[in-house]
Image 1 (spheres, each protein chain N blue to C red):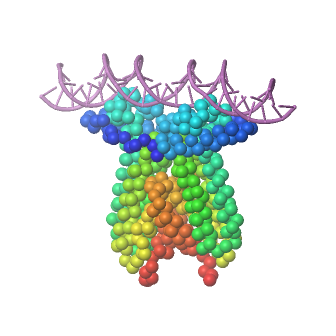
Image 2 (spheres, helix red, strand yellow):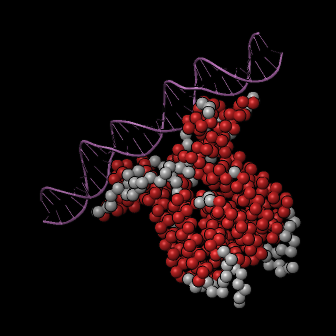
Image 3 (tube, rainbow over the protein chains, first blue to last red):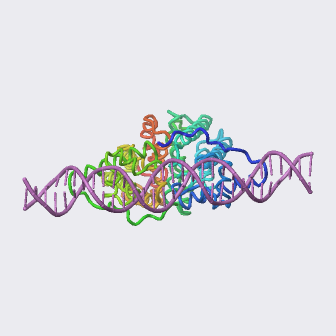
Length: 213
Length: 213
DNA sequence: TCCAAAACTGAAGGATTATTCATATCTTGG
DNA sequence: CCAAGATATGAATAATCCTTCAGTTTTGGA
């Protein structure tokens, strides 16, 4: 849905002095705060600037649009999570199914929970412009990564490794998202942390045709 | 996040003649179309009215706000899905774990896919006002329903039925949502339809302590 | 056929908001 | 310490959009 992804979403200019770096950071944080407090629908350039303690004009020195500001936020978060998952993948390469399942689930939870605020805030941005392309890319990336792990896992034989990887990615991504959006309580997160690894492990075990031990 | 849930979200008046019923339906459909084509951020009362072939004033005869319009949409969809799941629950009461897992997964998929358009459209509305309360309620409802099914399933013994039900609800809700938002292709849905029942079944079996057969 | 209620119309008011730019202030290398 | 570039300011502009309401058209029963 939504607008075709704008072409000029990059920051307008790079900071050169120390204070501008601080300004950008302040804007970044303010954006997340406004996003959480008021939602995307109520996020205005003025409000963000006010909260960041700068003037509107300053914002426009670094971002050509309001959209660019939001987009930068999303990209930053995606990159963070992607790199965290890549690390996990490296660590788990060659491990058995149980280690992979639990390792992936934990890494995913940790990455998302590292900045719950930012994660939750970002879910609302989809309203402003089309994030499906980004999400789609992220999903494919995750699927490939998982597929690679499964391929290298000893004593495994999957009828359709790609489907299994796809499903696992969906299970991970979806369950955390739903909990964050519906009721992000400590209790629910604890439950997720307890059950999600089990669920992943169970699914992998059930789809593995090789009956080693 | 977002505005505190508005108090006057109900339709302003009920239709009494046939044409007004048709008008409301037209507005409903138009809203979904605009939502999908332009996103919430670009959904304006004028645009919806135009698409519905009525004047703006007509809309305000039935909905006090733009919000009320959107809210009605969400509620309708939630009710539809809830009742579908309740039917499935009745049907599956007393069945074994495999039937429950597959039945729930299929019912969920069917309910969501029955109106993919509406389902996808609605995901964006969260930007306009706080849906977390509604989502939270829906999640609790699903969890309870599943818990009831598990309690009545023969030959089962769960250490923590509530947690298992919660996790299953999250798995169902999340995976479908992620796929719809990231890349709602036929291929992906087919995969979901193939793998999700397996995943649910695997998880239930793995957490069941009773080793009957 | 007739009319009161129901339904519809759309221009206009009022409020909000993204974005610009002329001007002011700060930072730093020389 | 000074000038040139970097950074910050915020009132003004222009556009968009929600909502209202006085007036018109349609409906259905008597």
